[in-house]
Image (cartoon, rainbow over all chains, first blue to last red; front, side, top):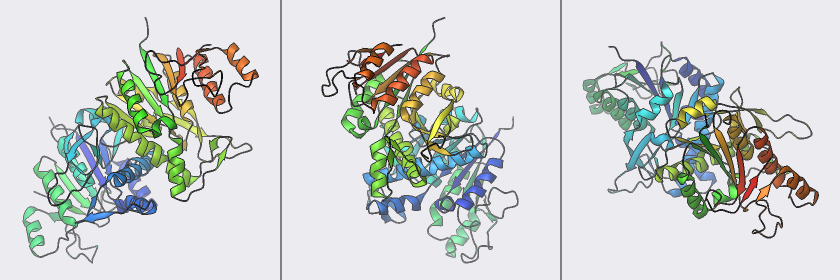
Length: 259
Length: 259
């Protein structure tokens, strides 16, 4: 029997910061048929709030060191402001949604990232997705909207990479559904020429990926994102796409990731 | 057939601000048997964050004028920080919970408070509780934890009085369940002598209430709270209690509201 489809869509910080683009994106998201899940980050807004509150933001290799104050700021901005604004906007578009963080319904269980050279603080890596609870929403035609905060079994909130959250959710549902994973960010996909937004690599398989890596075309910031893309495909996700704010439109030019 | 019981518990700002008291309270809450719902406010924390961000807080008759910046602050503190901290603490106590605001699952629909002498801004009064969605959590043994934010049918978030949210939820469920409503605040109940915390009026019916009012015993801050108590009883809630952080303990001294 053909499995039903489930779409998991991740939107990044820059798309969230631009209200006009966000509104257009959410209209596209609302038009997607069938069960779907939205995952959002919100990096810069947390940094701005931390600045205003006088909390220092420390980044190591593009990753945020999350002390207790920073975790509070992240909880306020991601699970509070951004999450509820998106939920309210989607309700206004007649899309019934529930905003969640990983602590809600034990939906995203994680453990603290092990301390090696660096202690990232309250940063967690996903251990388990509670598909049972999330499914109980999907069967009611309710769309879950996740902020990238997870929770340990012991009840500690953890800052978690939003790309990884989206990938792990799509993977966890891939035995039950034919899952499609969409990463929407500020560029139209992987670019052959990083300075030319029209030079989109439309199909990226591992061979081409290795070549682009060797040629130095893939920027460092793209590495973890593309790692998540290939990892998701390997772990059972049917389709992975990477593109700009219009990625969900049928005629969008974007990068399709292939095994 | 005897109906099942449902307990709706509201906790106020001062209890939330004291981590030690909050932890003890949440242990009591976890021990409550049967389906239950928690509703929380968080007034002072929002004011403190607004101060730090340089937003002016304007109160009229003890009520907050909620402009767009204030609504953002409330969304961050109530639906973000406080809500998710409580959810994580309850998960740590093995109580499976989901933190919600009224926009989530269209659970608390409100409309903007009509402008008479004062425009309260983004302040809403409850119109409808979505018992169908909330029940779908209760039947999974999941405890909903509500921040006092509601949402209009048009998708506008509104700051809403937490006592009213708790009362309206208890009323909405009273045809399906035998509902009990608990208001936990910083005093042990209605006090005969406001300066003596042991002078608790253990039973308060409308006759006694009118007498206390006439004698000037009821402070102005207590009026809306007691209004909600009597209103809930009139509208079908079976039992209403008012007391301190230990209200949920069986031997607590508190005020029982009677018709």
